[in-house]
Length: 126
Image (cartoon, rainbow, N blue to C red; front, side, top):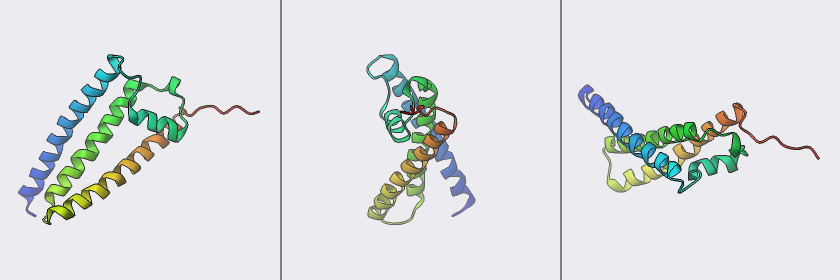
């Protein structure tokens, strides 16, 4: 791979990242502001998995970080798969495995970060 191809792939990653981030962020904010939904699926997943207190969460800030994570996952997988010189069936399989691995790992890291910041529910002692 030449230097020109590497810079082209980095440029394409950044362009895809920005476009996907803007679309996701605007769409999710519109969903929350129009009162169609109180929160999005990713927030519900994090609340259930890490036992977070929904009342103390800053939803706007969480939507920003979630959109950044989602845009990174989509852009990275798309750019990486585009660079591979293999057949399409292998590209789909690798992309599928990478998709689930990145979703699990990045949301796990973000959930642990929220727990560390103190957003976990206080447990009552009986």
